[in-house]
Length: 212
Image (cartoon, rainbow, N blue to C red):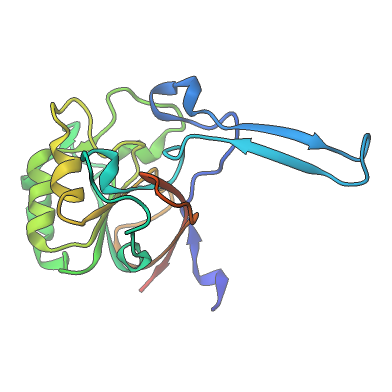
């Protein structure tokens, strides 16, 4: 594996990073427990929300009695990936009609990643671009196995969270918080390695892309 061929699209974890709705509870806390001024070694602890930064949503996140991370299969978030550049759309929500032009390039069993103007700022936008219900239904019908987006949430302002439920309810995993500022539209291979945590609804992950 030539690591130079891969681009890291993972958000950097830090206490100052952008978090969903700027909520303090979602900001990572890193505590230095030992340093060379007091000990013979250096050691730190971290406390963070499982949905901070780049992460994968499990069905349990939005579906009562939905599957948790113990059922998750890592193959679902790895493999061929198509990045769609939607930075030019005027709407704040991605509907089916925004995706129809890409129908022939969206392949069943692959991953679709949505790049929007969310990628162009490091400040949380309460009116961020999201995937609307019709867009989620379209991608599900195309047979994709995973949908990624550059927002810290794949939807907002939709009662009952239909985007999450359409995808997660049909075993289509969601990756949120992908850093796509320097990524062009096109076909890639995705390498997504989540932290292995049992019985939870979200997994922080390291995500890399390699152009095909």
